[in-house]
Image 1 (cartoon, rainbow, N blue to C red):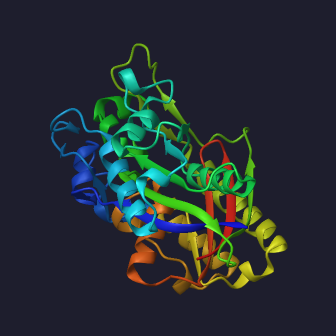
Image 2: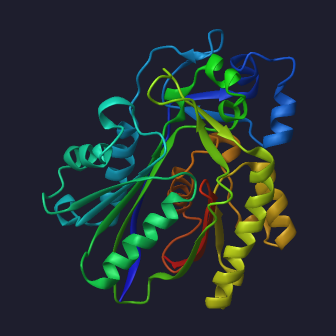
Image 3: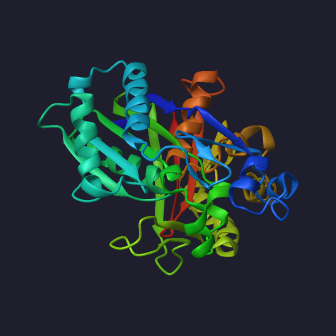
Length: 340
């Protein structure tokens, strides 16, 4: 028995912001020209679920809720899976932008999403505070739960909404200017079920290097009105290639056919780093879909969003061999071979 991807879903935020707007947003349009941002990050625009004010460097209206995005992606995934809501045995929600206040602790976001979706009371809900690598780790846990026989249908949702933290003054004060330029909002979801016909997750490898956290939240959550996501940019650039290659090499050693997969879905770290890495390891350009250039880096949601887009476009489908590969804050890294 294997765990297979039965359905996928995603959410597309309504507001798109180009590099010219973001240069004004961070308060340095002369320094951060559209051309320089695109050259360094390979990003032309990013999408947010709430509207930003380029003059004030803050949201037009405070608020916004990542569970709106999570619900939309989840319902898409459930609908495309062929399963009913009442058949879901386990929900795993992954996010690094949990809403402040009452949902900051105790898995409240996962429990609220459980309620919104109308899951059974005996369907367990888990919430994971994780960054860019979190979705693959959650899928691996879902696979293990299904293969153990304890659960038959598992819903994994990743939702990231950094726009609620966008405050130019705070980012400048914390020397975290890169985050507004690179991140975007988004959500992705997959439903996993039991497979007896050969389809499904073939194998996976995961690892953690706590000595390389890659990111942190700057500011005191008890006293600061806003926190700022701070990226260790140089370490991320180096570590992505190092950890991604390690994960791919280990996966291919266990699953040799993964060396010639139909598609390689990498975490959308930034288009430039991704392009340089795939050229270095010799993966054909046409096998590496990219949407970070027009979506921004959506953390854990990125890989699931990309998978949904590839499935719905027909570029991959039943019988396709795909490889997921992620590197994220922690540092978490891993790779997974899946027969759709």
